[in-house]
Image 1 (cartoon, rainbow, N blue to C red):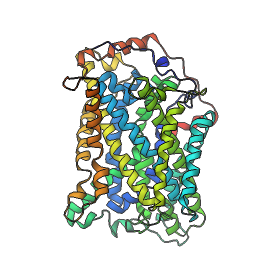
Image 2 (cartoon, one colour):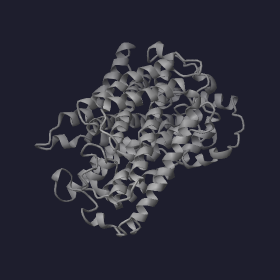
Image 3 (cartoon, helix red, strand yellow):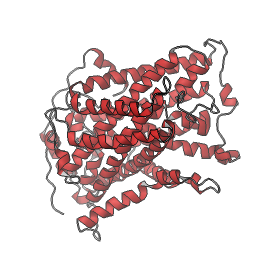
Image 4 (cartoon, rainbow, N blue to C red):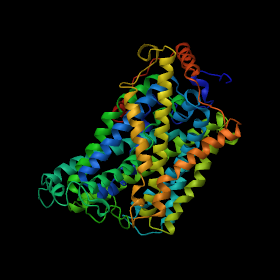
Length: 525
């Protein structure tokens, strides 16, 4: 195998100033992830598995995702490359797998961006019945403008959106607690009423007994996958961030408590004030489809539903911006590695890969599917596609990290003393995540195999990524004439020692103290 040229991380990307280049943190990963998957998609989760089933599903996936983020954090602290996890496979695993997962990620974000635009259209239906095509066009133009034209204010815009999201989550939890204790306009104490009737679980698909309850829980895992999609991107724009070797581990170490605070507790509180049998949980027009809006509406609280819906609307824009940023960086990184057309290496004077952004802008037109179907139906379909491609990505991350881990062992590298940061409980948690994610990938579309439950759309969205990733992997091997050769990098040749040398030869400057409101971003970064 030809020796790969390694360069200091600050010169790896060749990109100039960018949205992240003036930041000392990786806050866009978590702040950008918190969006419609939590605020809107959780409605479907609650209706499928009930309040306890939903809390368990979000907790289960959250623990597995925490392991993935810790693994990414360890690799990213040593190798802060633009393009993140996709490029780690290039160095630590298999170039063919790097190519395959790179295009899997491009596909994922090509669907994720229009999914957020459709989510915005669902939310706007709360106030008006104006044709969805107008809102699809408006939000598409806003995202493109933010990604290309208004890049100088991107960081400030995302900081403001993150503040709004945190305020909304805190406000929702307080509101739910007040309503539960009888502090609403009707002064009726709810307590755990909805956990008793209709109950903590839902008998999914009409399956009786504990099997039906487990089916609801297992199905809801896909909703949780979508809610957490992109949370592994703490290293995506790493080389554009000041002091990435300090910022990346700092963000990774906080991820578990952030998941508990922002996802699990919020789902628990909403399950107290919205019954799983409520017909508006993403089963109709979408006018009151968010469980958070439903909670305020059921309690008879005036004005608050509109305020909640408005903030959730900004979160859809924010998540769309984050997906556009992430997707364009991945496509740019692939072009730099020769895995994508050279045209995507073009950057503008702000350091933005504008051709990569333009490619995603084309796929925004998928949002116009709402003109032939309801916005909530299209959102659900796009959500399922993103969930499975995210699952494939996490499986490959686990495989890549395990190669990295065992390469360190093979080469006599002490992770605790020789690396910038070593993730705890490895490799056990990564192995566990790999097994569970693979099981979920293979069984995610189980409902289509139940007699009388066949649904072509569900089957395609559940299993399309499996033949896709194999086609990409073996297609690359065929193109490079290595179809019948093992292209996996031997553990003894994984360039961990060379990256350690680069790290030691390129120390980071001291971190600057945060000032003003920036001190508050400890909440999400």
